[in-house]
Image 1: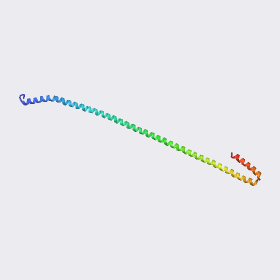
Image 2: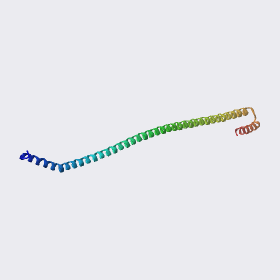
Image 3: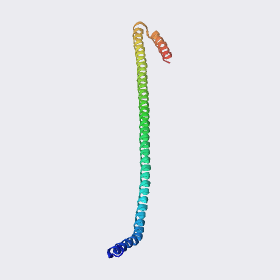
Image 4: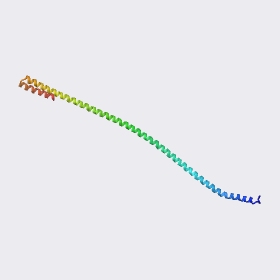
Length: 160
């Protein structure tokens, strides 16, 4: 076996392969280590991006909740304000109706006063006219003049 050339070619081939594989395996191992490191870095970046995305999602959800809460507060405030405005409008309308009613009552009272004054004035005029006719028909001129003067003075005193 040691004398056969095939044996020595096989031994030489094995030695050659062993010598060649050693640096080649180092290069392969180095390439694999570099690739492993690159993959590890990419995984870390992916995890950092995932964490950042989760933070952004959480912040987005918080902002959404805050916006909903703020919109609910605005809506509640608007409802309160609308109720206050409705109550104010109702109070203003009630006050306006009371003022109009009071104005109408004042006008009615003034009309009553004016009507009573007109009736009183007419009654005085009728009484004066009737008295004048009676006096003219029943009295002579001298008595007539005295009674008219007296009546005029008493009517003037009553009208004051």
